[in-house]
Amino acid sequence: MVKVTVWNEYRHERNDDKIAAVYPEGIHGQIASFLKEAGLDVRTATLDEPEHGLTEEVLNNTDVLVWWGHIAHKEVSDEIVDRVHQRVLQGMGLVVLHSGHMSKIFMKLMGTSCDLKWREAGEKERLWVMNPSHPIAEGIGEYIELEHEEMYGTHFDVPAPDELIFVGWFEGGNVFPSGSTYRRGNGKIFYFQPGHESYPTYYHPEIQKVIINGVNWCEPTKRAYPVYGRSQELEMIKREVLL
Ligand code: ZN
Image 1 (cartoon, rainbow, N blue to C red):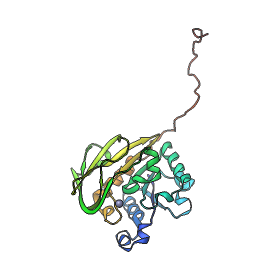
Image 2 (image 1 turned 90 degrees about the horizontal axis):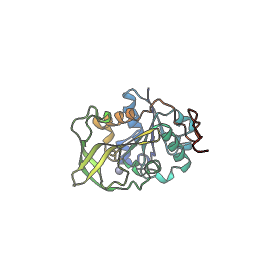
Image 3 (image 1 turned 90 degrees about the vertical axis):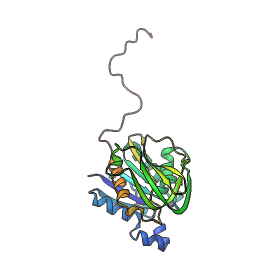
Image 4 (image 1 turned 60 degrees about the vertical axis):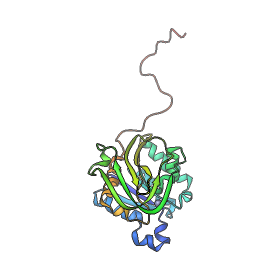
């Protein structure tokens, strides 16, 4: 069974009644609930817990980490970011949601500003499937329609993705690479754009399906971490020519 840790900064839901009404158990609570229903082994962690809930023990027992953050990216300690980064390189999967595009961990893995255009106008979004054979798009039709979502628009300053799974179109005219995959070291990363805190996006069955698929796709490959550094020759090397 895939072991998932859902991490959330958990600030909007505690500081704003309107957002608490959308996510009474927190965004992490809602995401954890549909991942559990899908048969995954799920725990949650939040920013204000000791070590942000991401102790060595927790991370060593996490196959896939799901990340939601927004207003408190800077409060995440560099030490924990380095720890998560190491785990990703060793093979832990990472699903970065919505405003997690500016999280320290995503920026470190991408190496770019990860900036984008945005607009909060409650507009409609239509997420088109770009890669219908990809496991992350399994069970999804030609597109997903969200009645209200925050606009994220291109240009999105990230490296070219390995695979582009969704392109989002917004009512106001912008488009965005809304679902994309990356590989870093032994680890797999899925970025998925929907999920602004004031909209009930994570109750949408098809959005849930994509996140479940994304978690399953990011599951670590069962192989040892590569060996780096000085390497012993595998056969005798004839040195006469050089000597
Ligand atoms: Zn947002």
